[in-house]
Figure 1 (cartoon, rainbow, N blue to C red):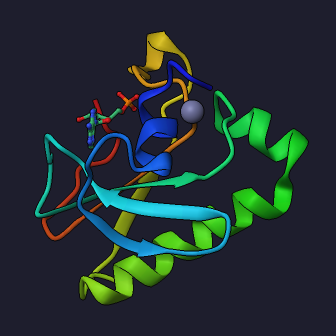
Figure 2 (cartoon, helix red, strand yellow):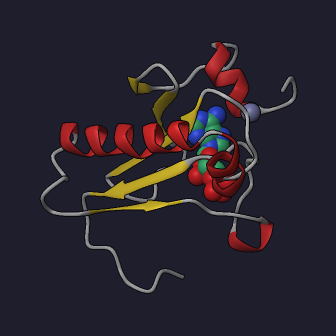
Length: 114
Ligand code: AMP
Ligand code: ZN
C-alpha cells in the first residue's frame, strides 16, 4: 500500500531501528516507547489488523508471534514476562492500520491495561 507508514518501513522508505527480521516479518523499536522494551512486530505484507492476517495468512501471523518471542529473548525479558498487544480498531487505540504486535516488557505491567 503506497500510503501506509509501515509498508514504507518494510520498503526502507522510512527509517526505523530494526532489531530482527525474518522472511515474512520485521521487528523495530516503537518511536514513542511505553516500556523499557517496546518493539513493534509486523508482517511484510499489508493487512489492516490481526484478524485479517489470520484469515488470509495464518502462517504470517504465526511468524509475527514467533519473531516477537525471539526479540523478547534477545532483550532478556522472556523469563520475566512480556505482553503482546494487537490494538484492533480506532476505539481500542489503533492508529496505524497495518497489523502490528506491540511487544512490551522490562517493567511491571498492570492488568487489566487501561
Ligand atoms: P497503534 O496505536 O496500536 O496503532 O500503534 C502504533 C504505534 O506506532 C505507536 O505506538 C507509535 O508510537 C508507533 N509509531 C508511529 N510511527 C512510528 C515510526 N515511524 N516508527 C516507529 N514507530 C512508530
Ligand atoms: Zn502497510
